[in-house]
Length: 173
Ligand SMILES: CC(C)(COP(=O)(O)OP(=O)(O)OC[C@H]1O[C@@H](n2cnc3c(N)ncnc32)[C@H](O)[C@@H]1OP(=O)(O)O)[C@@H](O)C(=O)NCCC(=O)NCCS
Image (cartoon, rainbow, N blue to C red; front, side):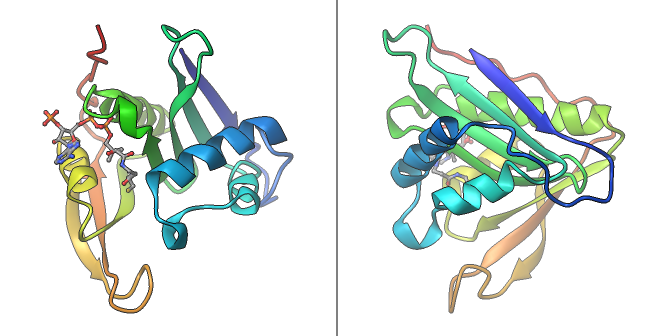
């Protein structure tokens, strides 16, 4: 099951009420811990700020075939700037097309809002994420030196949204 939440007010206020509850933010935080090393992960406070941002979009994927219906993935993006912020897929659920599915949904949403291109930043060493985004037309346009700290560089990537995003289906049996 996919839950979509948007915090868009089209006012000049930068922050709104969080669009997720504290319990739901804790679930995102738990997934961040499984997906990123300590220096790279977002903590509760930062995630709470993100879901309070005017313009934020959050997609959450819950695995319904498992009894406790765990959160297995989420994707955050900024609907005002068309920037993808983060994408987390639980290590046990990777390689099933879940990441692709969430990106195809976020790009379609951005397109429907009138954006003609989307951007994201990815560590130069994150081969899985670079490959995934390449499939959606993202190309590196700039090297962001020391973006994640001294000696830890990232690419700024951009894709065009002028063509409909290719559909990506989840391949879980
Ligand atoms: C990157 C990540 C989101 C991919 O999610 P996923 O659901 O496993 O991705 P998909 O199954 O949709 O894979 C789509 C494509 O991504 C690429 N890819 C995914 N995992 C890969 C890996 N381990 N090595 C190389 N390429 C990989 C492949 O091109 C794949 O296409 P293919 O199946 O046709 O080969 C996931 O590995 C993850 O959560 N990583 C840790 C957090 C992270 O780095 N997030 C991105 C931050 S920018």
